[in-house]
Length: 123
Length: 379
Image (cartoon, rainbow over all chains, first blue to last red; front, side, top):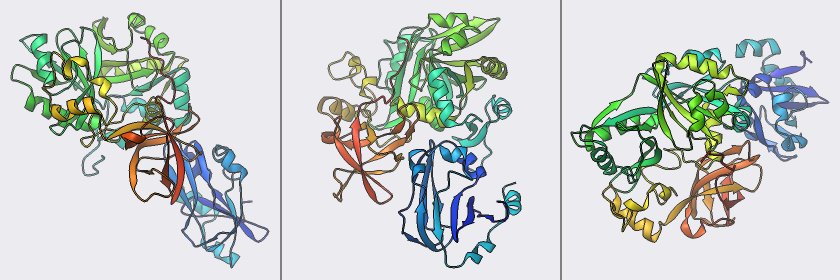
Protein backbone atom coordinates (compact mmCIF):
# COMPACT_ATOMS: atom_id res chain seq x y z
CA UNK A 1 0.00 0.00 0.00
CA UNK A 2 3.03 2.23 0.39
CA UNK A 3 3.01 3.41 -3.20
CA UNK A 4 -0.56 4.69 -3.51
CA UNK A 5 -0.88 6.25 -0.09
CA UNK A 6 -0.27 9.95 0.50
CA UNK A 7 -0.03 12.07 3.63
CA UNK A 8 -1.07 15.62 4.52
CA UNK A 9 0.57 18.04 6.93
CA UNK A 10 -2.65 17.74 8.97
CA UNK A 11 -1.71 14.10 9.64
CA UNK A 12 -4.32 12.56 7.37
CA UNK A 13 -3.64 9.70 5.00
CA UNK A 14 -5.24 9.55 1.55
CA UNK A 15 -5.49 6.30 -0.39
CA UNK A 16 -6.89 5.83 -3.88
CA UNK A 17 -9.50 3.11 -4.11
CA UNK A 18 -11.79 2.67 -7.16
CA UNK A 19 -11.25 6.29 -8.33
CA UNK A 20 -12.20 7.59 -4.89
CA UNK A 21 -9.89 8.72 -2.15
CA UNK A 22 -10.24 7.16 1.28
CA UNK A 23 -9.30 9.47 4.16
CA UNK A 24 -8.22 8.68 7.70
CA UNK A 25 -5.70 9.86 10.27
CA UNK A 26 -2.18 8.55 10.69
CA UNK A 27 -0.89 6.37 13.51
CA UNK A 28 1.14 9.33 14.69
CA UNK A 29 -1.98 11.51 14.90
CA UNK A 30 -3.97 8.77 16.64
CA UNK A 31 -1.19 8.41 19.20
CA UNK A 32 -1.17 12.15 19.85
CA UNK A 33 -4.96 12.25 20.26
CA UNK A 34 -5.13 9.48 22.81
CA UNK A 35 -8.32 7.56 23.51
CA UNK A 36 -10.97 8.67 21.04
CA UNK A 37 -14.44 8.78 22.57
CA UNK A 38 -16.55 10.49 19.92
CA UNK A 39 -16.57 10.91 16.17
CA UNK A 40 -18.95 12.96 14.05
CA UNK A 41 -18.78 12.21 10.35
CA UNK A 42 -20.13 14.36 7.50
CA UNK A 43 -23.29 13.43 5.61
CA UNK A 44 -22.88 11.42 2.46
CA UNK A 45 -23.40 13.64 -0.58
CA UNK A 46 -21.94 16.75 1.03
CA UNK A 47 -19.87 18.94 -1.26
CA UNK A 48 -16.79 20.19 0.54
CA UNK A 49 -14.00 22.66 -0.10
CA UNK A 50 -10.40 22.10 0.87
CA UNK A 51 -9.87 22.87 4.60
CA UNK A 52 -13.59 22.64 5.49
CA UNK A 53 -14.03 21.00 8.87
CA UNK A 54 -15.57 17.67 7.92
CA UNK A 55 -14.97 15.36 10.86
CA UNK A 56 -15.07 16.10 14.57
CA UNK A 57 -12.97 13.78 16.64
CA UNK A 58 -12.83 13.97 20.42
CA UNK A 59 -10.53 12.29 22.89
CA UNK A 60 -11.08 12.28 26.65
CA UNK A 61 -9.21 15.53 26.89
CA UNK A 62 -9.81 17.53 23.73
CA UNK A 63 -11.70 18.03 20.49
CA UNK A 64 -9.98 18.19 17.10
CA UNK A 65 -11.25 18.86 13.61
CA UNK A 66 -10.32 16.92 10.53
CA UNK A 67 -10.18 19.11 7.45
CA UNK A 68 -11.13 18.19 3.91
CA UNK A 69 -7.81 17.63 2.12
CA UNK A 70 -9.19 18.73 -1.27
CA UNK A 71 -12.34 20.08 -2.94
CA UNK A 72 -14.79 17.31 -3.70
CA UNK A 73 -17.84 15.36 -2.67
CA UNK A 74 -18.18 13.04 0.32
CA UNK A 75 -19.62 9.86 -1.18
CA UNK A 76 -19.33 7.40 1.66
CA UNK A 77 -18.68 7.60 5.40
CA UNK A 78 -17.56 4.89 7.82
CA UNK A 79 -20.73 4.91 9.95
CA UNK A 80 -19.83 1.94 12.21
CA UNK A 81 -16.89 4.00 13.46
CA UNK A 82 -19.23 6.41 15.29
CA UNK A 83 -20.41 3.45 17.40
CA UNK A 84 -16.86 2.34 18.13
CA UNK A 85 -14.66 5.46 18.12
CA UNK A 86 -11.94 3.67 20.11
CA UNK A 87 -11.07 1.87 16.86
CA UNK A 88 -9.20 4.99 15.75
CA UNK A 89 -6.55 4.13 18.32
CA UNK A 90 -6.41 0.47 17.29
CA UNK A 91 -6.42 0.58 13.51
CA UNK A 92 -6.14 4.18 12.28
CA UNK A 93 -4.62 3.23 8.92
CA UNK A 94 -7.12 0.47 8.17
CA UNK A 95 -10.61 -0.16 9.57
CA UNK A 96 -10.85 3.30 11.13
CA UNK A 97 -11.02 5.26 7.87
CA UNK A 98 -13.40 8.26 8.04
CA UNK A 99 -14.83 8.91 4.60
CA UNK A 100 -14.40 8.40 0.86
CA UNK A 101 -14.48 11.39 -1.42
CA UNK A 102 -14.71 11.98 -5.12
CA UNK A 103 -12.36 14.60 -6.50
CA UNK A 104 -12.10 16.23 -9.88
CA UNK A 105 -8.62 15.09 -10.72
CA UNK A 106 -6.73 12.36 -8.93
CA UNK A 107 -3.42 13.90 -9.98
CA UNK A 108 -4.03 16.52 -7.26
CA UNK A 109 -2.78 13.83 -4.90
CA UNK A 110 0.73 14.25 -6.29
CA UNK A 111 1.09 17.41 -4.18
CA UNK A 112 0.94 15.46 -0.93
CA UNK A 113 3.73 13.70 0.91
CA UNK A 114 4.85 10.15 0.28
CA UNK A 115 5.20 7.79 3.24
CA UNK A 116 8.95 8.49 3.43
CA UNK A 117 8.37 12.25 3.26
CA UNK A 118 5.74 12.05 5.99
CA UNK A 119 8.10 10.07 8.23
CA UNK A 120 10.65 12.86 7.82
CA UNK A 121 7.94 15.44 8.48
CA UNK A 122 6.99 14.00 11.87
CA UNK A 123 10.50 13.18 13.04
CA UNK B 1 -1.80 30.42 31.91
CA UNK B 2 1.57 29.67 30.44
CA UNK B 3 3.76 32.66 29.84
CA UNK B 4 6.27 31.76 27.19
CA UNK B 5 8.50 34.68 28.11
CA UNK B 6 9.08 33.10 31.52
CA UNK B 7 10.91 29.84 32.01
CA UNK B 8 8.64 27.08 33.24
CA UNK B 9 9.25 25.80 36.73
CA UNK B 10 9.75 22.14 37.54
CA UNK B 11 8.59 20.17 40.56
CA UNK B 12 10.97 17.89 42.50
CA UNK B 13 9.46 14.99 40.50
CA UNK B 14 10.35 16.32 37.04
CA UNK B 15 13.01 13.65 36.39
CA UNK B 16 10.64 10.97 37.70
CA UNK B 17 7.97 12.03 35.20
CA UNK B 18 10.45 11.91 32.32
CA UNK B 19 11.67 8.48 33.44
CA UNK B 20 8.06 7.28 33.53
CA UNK B 21 7.56 8.42 29.91
CA UNK B 22 5.24 11.33 30.70
CA UNK B 23 4.10 13.82 28.11
CA UNK B 24 4.92 17.16 29.72
CA UNK B 25 2.87 20.33 29.17
CA UNK B 26 2.92 23.85 30.60
CA UNK B 27 0.40 24.24 33.42
CA UNK B 28 0.16 27.17 35.84
CA UNK B 29 3.78 28.08 35.16
CA UNK B 30 5.08 24.53 35.65
CA UNK B 31 6.10 21.74 33.33
CA UNK B 32 3.65 19.04 34.38
CA UNK B 33 2.78 15.52 33.18
CA UNK B 34 -0.53 15.58 31.27
CA UNK B 35 -0.40 11.83 30.72
CA UNK B 36 1.88 8.80 30.86
CA UNK B 37 2.15 6.05 28.22
CA UNK B 38 -0.98 4.39 29.66
CA UNK B 39 -3.12 7.29 28.37
CA UNK B 40 -5.83 9.42 29.98
CA UNK B 41 -8.64 6.87 29.72
CA UNK B 42 -6.74 3.96 31.30
CA UNK B 43 -5.15 6.23 33.90
CA UNK B 44 -8.61 7.41 34.92
CA UNK B 45 -10.02 3.89 35.15
CA UNK B 46 -6.93 2.64 36.97
CA UNK B 47 -7.37 5.31 39.66
CA UNK B 48 -10.96 4.17 40.23
CA UNK B 49 -9.92 0.49 40.40
CA UNK B 50 -6.44 0.50 41.99
CA UNK B 51 -4.35 3.47 43.06
CA UNK B 52 -3.08 6.46 41.10
CA UNK B 53 -0.09 8.60 42.03
CA UNK B 54 -0.36 12.30 41.18
CA UNK B 55 2.30 14.99 41.47
CA UNK B 56 0.57 18.07 42.88
CA UNK B 57 3.77 19.77 44.01
CA UNK B 58 2.88 22.79 41.86
CA UNK B 59 0.15 23.65 44.35
CA UNK B 60 0.93 26.15 47.08
CA UNK B 61 1.67 24.87 50.58
CA UNK B 62 1.43 27.60 53.19
CA UNK B 63 1.83 27.55 56.98
CA UNK B 64 0.16 30.15 59.16
CA UNK B 65 1.30 30.53 62.74
CA UNK B 66 0.87 33.00 65.55
CA UNK B 67 2.45 33.45 68.99
CA UNK B 68 -1.03 34.41 70.18
CA UNK B 69 -2.28 30.86 69.80
CA UNK B 70 -4.76 28.93 67.71
CA UNK B 71 -7.88 30.91 68.59
CA UNK B 72 -6.35 34.23 67.50
CA UNK B 73 -4.98 32.58 64.35
CA UNK B 74 -8.27 30.93 63.42
CA UNK B 75 -10.25 34.12 63.98
CA UNK B 76 -7.76 36.02 61.83
CA UNK B 77 -8.21 33.59 58.91
CA UNK B 78 -11.99 33.69 59.37
CA UNK B 79 -11.83 37.38 58.35
CA UNK B 80 -10.99 36.32 54.77
CA UNK B 81 -12.47 32.79 54.63
CA UNK B 82 -16.21 32.28 55.30
CA UNK B 83 -15.82 28.92 56.99
CA UNK B 84 -15.64 27.71 60.60
CA UNK B 85 -11.87 27.68 61.14
CA UNK B 86 -12.11 28.03 64.92
CA UNK B 87 -14.14 24.83 65.13
CA UNK B 88 -11.57 22.83 63.19
CA UNK B 89 -10.15 20.25 65.61
CA UNK B 90 -6.41 19.51 65.70
CA UNK B 91 -5.61 16.92 63.04
CA UNK B 92 -8.64 17.82 60.92
CA UNK B 93 -8.92 19.48 57.52
CA UNK B 94 -11.74 21.28 55.76
CA UNK B 95 -12.46 22.87 52.38
CA UNK B 96 -12.56 26.65 52.22
CA UNK B 97 -12.59 29.63 49.87
CA UNK B 98 -11.13 33.12 49.83
CA UNK B 99 -13.91 35.59 48.97
CA UNK B 100 -13.62 39.14 47.65
CA UNK B 101 -15.63 42.28 48.48
CA UNK B 102 -18.17 41.55 45.73
CA UNK B 103 -18.83 38.04 47.08
CA UNK B 104 -16.81 36.41 44.30
CA UNK B 105 -14.26 33.65 44.88
CA UNK B 106 -10.53 34.43 44.79
CA UNK B 107 -9.48 30.78 45.18
CA UNK B 108 -10.52 27.56 46.88
CA UNK B 109 -8.24 25.82 49.34
CA UNK B 110 -7.79 23.15 51.99
CA UNK B 111 -7.24 24.24 55.61
CA UNK B 112 -5.73 21.89 58.23
CA UNK B 113 -5.31 22.44 61.95
CA UNK B 114 -1.81 21.12 62.61
CA UNK B 115 -1.98 21.77 66.34
CA UNK B 116 0.69 24.46 66.14
CA UNK B 117 -0.83 26.40 63.27
CA UNK B 118 -2.87 26.20 60.09
CA UNK B 119 -1.62 24.45 56.96
CA UNK B 120 -3.16 25.64 53.70
CA UNK B 121 -3.03 24.06 50.26
CA UNK B 122 -3.97 26.49 47.48
CA UNK B 123 -4.20 26.29 43.70
CA UNK B 124 -0.99 26.59 41.71
CA UNK B 125 -2.35 29.27 39.39
CA UNK B 126 -3.44 31.44 42.33
CA UNK B 127 -0.68 30.85 44.86
CA UNK B 128 1.27 34.06 44.33
CA UNK B 129 -1.90 36.17 44.64
CA UNK B 130 -3.14 34.08 47.59
CA UNK B 131 0.07 34.57 49.57
CA UNK B 132 0.04 38.31 48.81
CA UNK B 133 -3.60 38.39 49.95
CA UNK B 134 -2.75 36.56 53.19
CA UNK B 135 0.15 38.92 53.87
CA UNK B 136 -1.92 41.99 53.10
CA UNK B 137 -4.99 41.08 55.12
CA UNK B 138 -3.90 38.99 58.12
CA UNK B 139 -2.89 40.89 61.28
CA UNK B 140 0.77 41.38 62.18
CA UNK B 141 0.82 38.57 64.75
CA UNK B 142 0.26 35.98 61.99
CA UNK B 143 3.32 34.66 60.16
CA UNK B 144 2.68 33.46 56.59
CA UNK B 145 5.28 30.99 55.34
CA UNK B 146 5.22 29.44 51.90
CA UNK B 147 6.59 25.92 52.15
CA UNK B 148 8.90 25.54 49.17
CA UNK B 149 11.07 22.65 50.32
CA UNK B 150 8.34 20.00 50.33
CA UNK B 151 6.77 18.09 47.46
CA UNK B 152 3.06 17.27 47.45
CA UNK B 153 1.86 13.91 46.13
CA UNK B 154 -1.65 12.51 45.96
CA UNK B 155 -2.31 8.80 46.10
CA UNK B 156 -5.91 8.12 45.14
CA UNK B 157 -8.12 5.11 44.65
CA UNK B 158 -9.51 2.09 46.51
CA UNK B 159 -6.04 0.54 46.90
CA UNK B 160 -4.34 3.76 48.04
CA UNK B 161 -4.57 2.82 51.71
CA UNK B 162 -2.99 -0.60 51.25
CA UNK B 163 -0.19 0.88 49.13
CA UNK B 164 0.66 3.83 51.38
CA UNK B 165 0.43 1.68 54.53
CA UNK B 166 3.51 -0.24 53.34
CA UNK B 167 5.50 2.98 53.80
CA UNK B 168 3.45 4.60 56.59
CA UNK B 169 1.47 1.95 58.54
CA UNK B 170 -0.35 4.62 60.60
CA UNK B 171 -2.42 5.79 57.61
CA UNK B 172 -4.91 2.96 58.09
CA UNK B 173 -6.15 4.80 61.19
CA UNK B 174 -7.00 8.00 59.31
CA UNK B 175 -10.54 8.92 58.29
CA UNK B 176 -11.69 11.22 55.48
CA UNK B 177 -10.34 14.76 56.07
CA UNK B 178 -8.00 13.77 58.91
CA UNK B 179 -4.71 15.62 58.47
CA UNK B 180 -1.73 14.57 60.55
CA UNK B 181 2.03 14.72 60.86
CA UNK B 182 3.79 11.40 61.17
CA UNK B 183 7.52 11.03 61.83
CA UNK B 184 9.33 8.01 60.42
CA UNK B 185 13.14 7.78 60.61
CA UNK B 186 13.36 11.50 61.46
CA UNK B 187 11.32 12.42 58.38
CA UNK B 188 8.05 14.25 58.86
CA UNK B 189 5.22 13.17 56.55
CA UNK B 190 2.24 15.55 56.45
CA UNK B 191 -0.62 13.33 55.37
CA UNK B 192 -4.30 14.07 54.91
CA UNK B 193 -6.91 11.53 53.93
CA UNK B 194 -8.35 13.57 51.07
CA UNK B 195 -7.88 14.33 47.41
CA UNK B 196 -9.71 15.61 44.38
CA UNK B 197 -10.82 12.53 42.47
CA UNK B 198 -13.91 11.38 44.38
CA UNK B 199 -11.94 8.34 45.56
CA UNK B 200 -10.60 7.47 48.96
CA UNK B 201 -6.98 8.51 49.11
CA UNK B 202 -4.28 10.70 50.56
CA UNK B 203 -2.40 13.91 49.96
CA UNK B 204 1.18 13.56 51.11
CA UNK B 205 3.58 16.41 51.78
CA UNK B 206 7.18 15.24 52.14
CA UNK B 207 10.62 16.87 51.99
CA UNK B 208 11.45 17.59 48.33
CA UNK B 209 14.67 15.59 48.53
CA UNK B 210 12.72 12.40 49.29
CA UNK B 211 9.96 12.87 46.72
CA UNK B 212 11.52 10.83 43.93
CA UNK B 213 12.38 7.95 46.24
CA UNK B 214 8.83 7.82 47.64
CA UNK B 215 7.26 8.13 44.16
CA UNK B 216 9.48 5.34 42.84
CA UNK B 217 8.62 3.09 45.80
CA UNK B 218 4.92 3.70 45.24
CA UNK B 219 4.86 3.07 41.48
CA UNK B 220 6.95 -0.07 42.00
CA UNK B 221 3.91 -1.50 43.79
CA UNK B 222 1.60 -3.65 41.69
CA UNK B 223 -1.52 -1.53 42.29
CA UNK B 224 0.03 1.94 41.76
CA UNK B 225 0.40 3.78 38.43
CA UNK B 226 1.47 7.38 37.83
CA UNK B 227 -1.45 9.54 36.68
CA UNK B 228 -1.30 12.83 34.76
CA UNK B 229 -3.30 16.04 34.75
CA UNK B 230 -5.59 14.78 31.99
CA UNK B 231 -7.07 12.03 34.15
CA UNK B 232 -6.97 14.29 37.21
CA UNK B 233 -9.38 16.57 35.35
CA UNK B 234 -11.77 13.83 34.19
CA UNK B 235 -11.74 12.28 37.68
CA UNK B 236 -12.60 15.54 39.46
CA UNK B 237 -15.24 16.34 36.84
CA UNK B 238 -17.00 13.00 37.39
CA UNK B 239 -16.75 13.64 41.14
CA UNK B 240 -18.59 16.95 40.62
CA UNK B 241 -15.70 18.94 42.08
CA UNK B 242 -15.08 22.54 41.00
CA UNK B 243 -11.98 23.59 39.11
CA UNK B 244 -11.01 27.12 40.11
CA UNK B 245 -10.76 29.50 37.16
CA UNK B 246 -13.30 27.44 35.25
CA UNK B 247 -16.29 26.45 37.42
CA UNK B 248 -15.77 29.13 40.06
CA UNK B 249 -13.93 32.45 39.95
CA UNK B 250 -14.29 36.09 41.00
CA UNK B 251 -17.53 36.39 39.00
CA UNK B 252 -19.26 33.54 40.87
CA UNK B 253 -20.43 33.64 44.47
CA UNK B 254 -20.25 30.50 46.64
CA UNK B 255 -24.05 30.19 46.51
CA UNK B 256 -24.07 30.46 42.71
CA UNK B 257 -21.16 28.00 42.61
CA UNK B 258 -23.20 25.53 44.68
CA UNK B 259 -20.52 25.29 47.34
CA UNK B 260 -22.57 26.94 50.08
CA UNK B 261 -22.08 23.71 52.08
CA UNK B 262 -18.55 24.98 52.74
CA UNK B 263 -20.00 27.84 54.82
CA UNK B 264 -20.91 26.37 58.20
CA UNK B 265 -23.91 27.55 60.26
CA UNK B 266 -21.74 29.46 62.70
CA UNK B 267 -20.71 31.88 59.90
CA UNK B 268 -24.24 32.31 58.50
CA UNK B 269 -26.97 34.73 59.61
CA UNK B 270 -27.87 33.96 63.20
CA UNK B 271 -24.60 32.07 63.82
CA UNK B 272 -22.25 32.98 66.67
CA UNK B 273 -19.64 34.35 64.22
CA UNK B 274 -21.99 35.49 61.47
CA UNK B 275 -20.42 37.24 58.50
CA UNK B 276 -17.21 39.19 58.99
CA UNK B 277 -15.65 38.09 55.69
CA UNK B 278 -15.31 39.91 52.34
CA UNK B 279 -18.59 39.96 50.41
CA UNK B 280 -20.61 38.85 53.46
CA UNK B 281 -23.57 41.12 52.63
CA UNK B 282 -24.16 39.45 49.29
CA UNK B 283 -23.26 35.93 50.38
CA UNK B 284 -25.43 35.94 53.54
CA UNK B 285 -28.31 37.38 51.53
CA UNK B 286 -27.94 34.69 48.85
CA UNK B 287 -27.73 31.95 51.51
CA UNK B 288 -31.11 33.16 52.74
CA UNK B 289 -32.85 34.14 49.50
CA UNK B 290 -31.05 32.03 46.92
CA UNK B 291 -29.00 33.31 43.97
CA UNK B 292 -30.19 34.03 40.46
CA UNK B 293 -28.13 31.26 38.96
CA UNK B 294 -26.56 28.05 40.12
CA UNK B 295 -23.86 25.59 39.08
CA UNK B 296 -25.42 22.25 38.17
CA UNK B 297 -24.46 18.88 36.76
CA UNK B 298 -25.34 18.40 33.08
CA UNK B 299 -25.68 15.17 31.12
CA UNK B 300 -25.61 15.62 27.34
CA UNK B 301 -28.20 13.17 25.95
CA UNK B 302 -26.11 12.15 22.95
CA UNK B 303 -22.53 10.94 22.70
CA UNK B 304 -20.92 14.28 21.87
CA UNK B 305 -18.77 15.69 24.70
CA UNK B 306 -19.61 19.31 25.50
CA UNK B 307 -16.62 21.37 26.55
CA UNK B 308 -16.08 24.54 28.54
CA UNK B 309 -17.68 27.58 26.89
CA UNK B 310 -20.53 25.69 25.19
CA UNK B 311 -23.59 28.01 25.35
CA UNK B 312 -26.86 26.80 26.87
CA UNK B 313 -30.43 27.65 25.82
CA UNK B 314 -33.85 26.96 27.36
CA UNK B 315 -35.26 25.45 24.15
CA UNK B 316 -34.12 24.22 20.75
CA UNK B 317 -35.22 27.52 19.18
CA UNK B 318 -34.78 30.29 21.76
CA UNK B 319 -32.37 33.10 20.91
CA UNK B 320 -31.39 34.07 24.44
CA UNK B 321 -28.47 32.23 25.95
CA UNK B 322 -29.26 31.25 29.54
CA UNK B 323 -25.91 29.93 30.68
CA UNK B 324 -22.82 28.06 29.66
CA UNK B 325 -20.83 24.94 30.35
CA UNK B 326 -17.82 25.62 32.58
CA UNK B 327 -16.28 22.11 32.54
CA UNK B 328 -17.15 19.20 30.35
CA UNK B 329 -15.84 16.18 28.59
CA UNK B 330 -16.18 12.45 28.40
CA UNK B 331 -16.44 10.58 31.71
CA UNK B 332 -14.50 7.32 31.38
CA UNK B 333 -16.23 5.75 34.41
CA UNK B 334 -19.63 7.27 33.64
CA UNK B 335 -19.05 6.05 30.04
CA UNK B 336 -20.84 9.08 28.65
CA UNK B 337 -20.24 12.80 28.26
CA UNK B 338 -20.53 14.73 31.53
CA UNK B 339 -20.45 18.47 32.22
CA UNK B 340 -21.19 21.20 34.69
CA UNK B 341 -22.31 24.74 34.12
CA UNK B 342 -24.44 27.63 35.26
CA UNK B 343 -28.21 27.93 34.78
CA UNK B 344 -30.87 30.33 36.04
CA UNK B 345 -32.02 28.93 39.40
CA UNK B 346 -35.55 28.25 38.13
CA UNK B 347 -34.10 25.80 35.58
CA UNK B 348 -31.50 24.34 37.92
CA UNK B 349 -33.52 21.34 38.99
CA UNK B 350 -32.62 17.75 38.26
CA UNK B 351 -34.38 16.31 35.26
CA UNK B 352 -34.94 19.64 33.49
CA UNK B 353 -34.13 19.44 29.79
CA UNK B 354 -32.25 22.31 28.22
CA UNK B 355 -30.23 22.66 25.02
CA UNK B 356 -26.58 23.23 24.24
CA UNK B 357 -25.37 24.68 20.97
CA UNK B 358 -22.60 22.57 19.55
CA UNK B 359 -21.14 23.27 16.10
CA UNK B 360 -24.32 25.11 15.10
CA UNK B 361 -26.70 22.41 16.34
CA UNK B 362 -28.96 22.49 19.40
CA UNK B 363 -28.55 19.26 21.35
CA UNK B 364 -30.56 18.22 24.42
CA UNK B 365 -28.92 18.18 27.84
CA UNK B 366 -30.44 17.03 31.14
CA UNK B 367 -29.78 18.75 34.46
CA UNK B 368 -28.46 15.94 36.65
CA UNK B 369 -27.25 15.35 40.20
CA UNK B 370 -23.54 15.24 40.92
CA UNK B 371 -21.29 13.37 41.42
CA UNK B 372 -21.58 11.49 38.13
CA UNK B 373 -19.64 8.63 39.70
CA UNK B 374 -20.26 7.62 43.33
CA UNK B 375 -17.56 8.80 45.73
CA UNK B 376 -15.82 6.32 48.03
CA UNK B 377 -14.47 8.47 50.86
CA UNK B 378 -13.64 6.57 54.06
CA UNK B 379 -15.65 8.53 56.64
